[in-house]
Image (tube, rainbow, N blue to C red; front, top):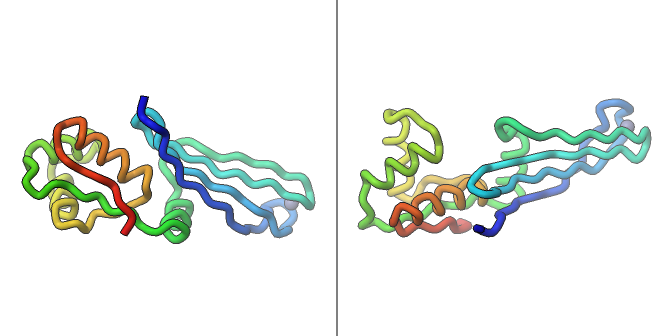
Length: 138
Ligand SMILES: [Zn+2]
């Protein structure tokens, strides 16, 4: 089994019930080829506890992760087959063919960035298809 890749952070936010300052935690993880995320809030003032997860990663949490940890760049072997890389990107990202072409262009030119779990998922998919790829912090 492949190692789990996790990116997490804590941040301050106001309790939605009482308005007190609380510490929240947010996590994005790559587990068995799938991306998961959750956020947790625990209010010391009123005792509110909330955990949220599932579905697409909220843009706010993604922005926080990128701000906290920095963007991760997907690097691929320039000699790699574009057709293979495109097939992997299409499968992993679930994008229509028209959109995959622009993503592939960004990947090939070293401009495709995201969180570590996101980029590691693509890098693993590419390596499994025989394309030399790594996810590296910029
Ligand atoms: Zn509260």
